[in-house]
Length: 122
Image (cartoon, rainbow, N blue to C red):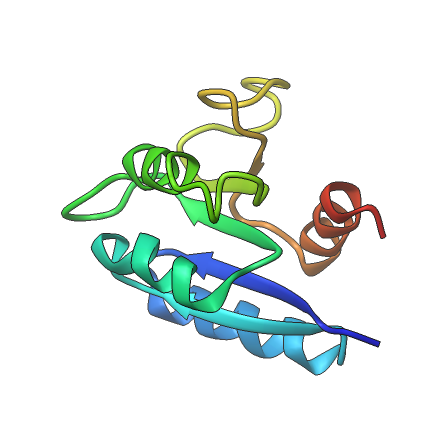
């Protein structure tokens, strides 16, 4: 079975490392993490992810700008982008953020796995 490729972009290295290790432990995922948003687009091109989890508030460049870079790249335009954010909760908005679905932090492994299944048709 081919492992799904998950790309996590978040400036909190502890968060991305823990999520990477936890997802890879299931045996179903290959995960790459990036903690500098300015590198995210090029790293995504190189990694060719099936889905991207992207923090919104990061130093140097925000997640919205990174998402637009990725969307404007024909090689990556089809890849689902899910925002991860602590700036709003599900009770504050049930909708998307800037046209992208989101998960509110703190987020559980089950919520991440359910989101992957929903967006990748698993």
